[in-house]
Amino acid sequence: MEFSYYIKYNNEYFKDENPLYFKEPVYYHGADAMKKFVSMLKEDTIKIEKFIIEKEDKYEDIKSMIDFNEHHYKRSNKWHICEKEISPEHVKVIDHCHLTGKYRDSAQNDCNLNYKITSFIPTIIHNLSGYDAHLFIKELGFDDSRLDVIPNN
Image 1: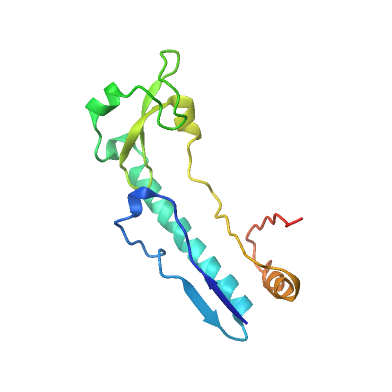
Image 2 (image 1 turned 180 degrees about the vertical axis):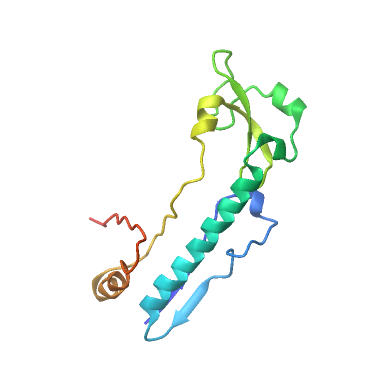
């Protein structure tokens, strides 16, 4: 058996950084491939979670913000999250990334409060069916991790 995987991240601010868990695609071939896949995936998700928690703690406070552009903030005429025109009936706030500390733009307070880093890591497995699926599923569920499956129907 064999598997290959890579971790895709979607954050333009990290393009110049090289955190621990952003690595080359993984390829593994061996009799214990399913067990190894689950183990490696879990190890990577723990690293990702730890990284996010450390960064959020560091940049949670607005005082830790980097690259704030007051001129840009005052002149902006659209909320950057919902992309609606700025209106006086909504509170205008400064939005910054809690992972990098970088200023993003002005935002409507409600949108900003709901704009969060997800507390789960979506995992997409291509062509998982039949016998391979049986071997993979067999390796899951041996710890207290939560697993939600969306079946292909």
